[in-house]
Image (cartoon, rainbow over all chains, first blue to last red; front, side, top):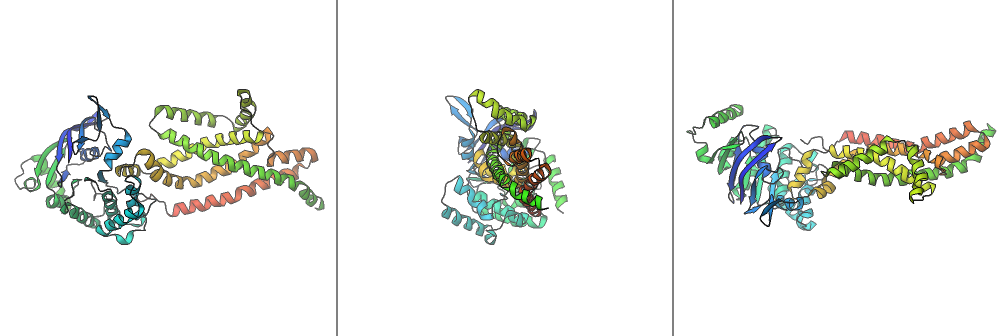
Length: 255
Length: 224
């Protein structure tokens, strides 16, 4: 489905991502964890070209989303082409980023109507179905600022789903939420996972990672330290010191 | 007292004619300056370095020279390069250009005030830059800067009085002529001042209202 090949990223000469390879299969839920500043968000943002890698490539269903081949040279894609790929890769942000001047419904139908050129009636029908799914059908005509963080994030998920993406990326979707609102967002994500949605999730929610994740990727200092099926990763005998320390810190904070 | 009233009746028609021209001058210049200002603002924030430089140069020239010089320049120098304009047209051109430079900065600030996440969210659902600008960023940015545009319009009303020097028969010009021919300086210039104040007042109320409303529910305040 999505492939990342020997990707490098530097900001002002400082290497943040140092050669990461990753391949995500259809229907797989890949959870990316790691200490803050490890480059995991940057890594995720490169999967839909919001960030451009310094080296390496990202392939969606075998096709490069960053470059096109002219003759035998690789040319960076124009903005319009990037947009075409981004439409296929949904993204949910830590800060929700709902369009502040649009109602909940308008937020959801904007992409389908303007990008996919779906008719308004069809878009609204689909939006209402998605609102039902995230449990917010009654908020359809509200503005984002009137909603709680958890509700905003569920709307943001509905907005991403409205584009019928092939894969959904989550960039710390619950990190900006009050603790009591985290559950409702994770529940929606869990449902999506159960329906077979392909997902890449950057998160600190170890419970979610363990329960929903098919694979856990541990990133530290710009490299993948461990890439393991969830049940093996959380196995008591995980003998990587760095991961042990990280998991300990996290669980201490939770309890 | 009797004399004052009869003078007011005597001067009013000329001053009202001038007031109408002042209103036209202001309204037309405002529309043009909004269009040019928005274009220059977009040019300033685009990633094309050449366009950036051109827009910065434009703003620098326009803000760095007096409006009076610009008016005289358009009216007297443009004909030499083959562009002959009536006094009214020249005033429109000069006022629009002058105001556009200030509005460009207003628009730019408005666009910059929209959180970066709005653009990213728009791009993430497959919008390209220009579509995201049109549909997501500008509607919010413009809403935020409407009070500032109102303030610019107030300045523009008063600036339009400078068009008197290139013989546009607006309020100031007509007042000047009346004063020169009747020597009723106190009365005429007081009337002129009052008319400008009356013209600005509704705009001023409107700006106050918008600023209060804006403070009450700032649309992007709860976004990260």
